[in-house]
Amino acid sequence: MELTSDALVNSLLALGAAAVVTTLWLWPRLAPQRPLPVLGRIGLLTVVQASVLAVLALSVNNSFGFYTSWDDLLSPGGAKLALAGNENHRGGTPVPDALVQPTTEGGLETITNLPKGPPEEVGRIESVRVSGKETGFSDQMFVYLPPAYFDPKLTLVRFPVLLAIAGYPGTTLNLLHELPLAQTAIELQRSGKMPPTVLVMARPAVVPSRDTECVDVPGGPRTETWFVKDVPEAILSAYRVGRTAGSWGTLGYSTGGSCALRLAMRFPNVYGSAASLHGDFTVRQDNYTGGDLFNGDKALAQQHDLGWRLQNLPVPALNVLAVSTRAEGDYPQTVQFVDLATRTAAANPQFKIDSLYLDDGGHNFDSWTRELPATLEWLGSHLG
Image (cartoon, rainbow, N blue to C red; front, side, top):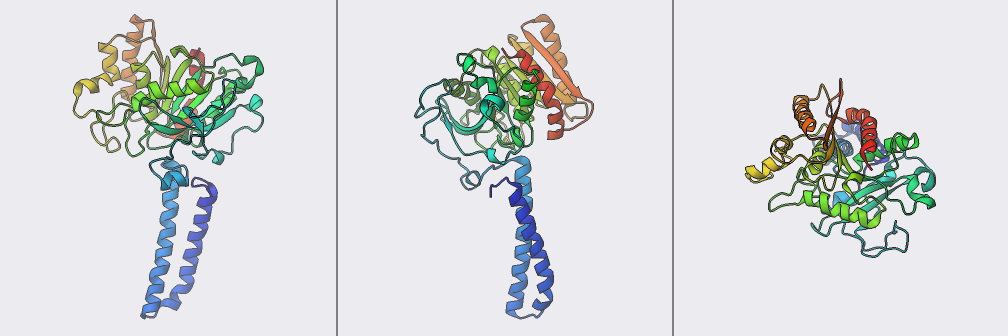
C-alpha cells in the first residue's frame, strides 16, 4: 500500500481497534504477577501505543505532505536521477540524459479525481524528475499538459507555463491532493476562462529539512538559482513552452506564495506574472528556516524585502496579484504592501498590482481552494 493512501490509514485504524479489543479481552487473564503475564501486559500495551502513534504519524504526514512514498521516507536524500529515456515533447525520439526524466515518484496514483480519457481530450499529468545544471539539484515535480498540447495542428505552438509552488512543510503532491490546482485549471480551460497552459508543480525546498524561502543561502542551498535558472532551462528543454517572461508566471500558497512573488520581483526577466496566496513580503526567520538565512547580511536581507525593493530599486515590468483574507493574521501586512504597490504602479505603468480578499478564512487549504479559481483566471489573463 502507498504511504499516502487511505487504505493504509484504514488498515492501521483497524489494527489499532483490534489491539484495544484484544487487550481488554486478555488483560484479566494476564493479571497474575508472574514474569510471563507481566511481559504479556507490556507487549499488549506496546502494540496499542505503537498502533495509535502510527495512525497519528500517518495522519500528520498526509496532512502536511512530509513524505509522499516509502522511498521518500526510507531514503530522505531522494532518489538519484534515473538516466532513462524520456519522451521528447517537441516531437522526435527519446532523449537520453535529459534534464527532465519520467519517474514513478510523487504519489500521483493516489489522486483519484483527475479526469479520465486520452490526452487530446483531458490533457495529461506527468510525474518527472528535474535535474539542474547550475545547482546540481534534482527533484520530483508534476507537469500538466493541456489537451491543446496534443493537437496535431498545434505542434509548432509554444504554450504559456505556470510554475506552482507548494507551502512548507509539504510536497508537490499537496498541489493535487490538498489544493486542486490541476483539477481547477482543467475546468477553467474547458470553460474558456483560462487559456491552455502548462502547469509545473514543485515544492519550495529542494533540501526538505530546511525552509530556505526560495533564496540562495550564503554557503548553503541555492534554491533561488534552482527556480530562476535550472527549472526554466529544464522545462524549456523538454516541453513546447514560451521563451519570454510574458509566457511564464508563478503561483504559490503560504511559503510558496512568498516564493512566487519574490522570484518574480527579483527576476522579472524570467517570470512576468506572479500570484501569492497568503504569502509574506519579507523573508521569514523561524524554526523552519533554521534562523537567519542571510547570516546577518542586512544588505542581502533588504534585497529580498519586497517593500524595500519597490521604494529603492527600479520598478520591474511585472503583473502581481496578492490574495488573502480579512481574517488572516498577516492581513495588515498584505494591505500595507498592496497600498505601497498601488502607489508605485500609478507612477510606473509597467508595474501592475491587483488584490483579492475573502471576508473570512484562515491560513489553510479551505481558503486557498476558494481563492484558486479567481487566481488562475487572473493569471490566465496575463500569460501570453
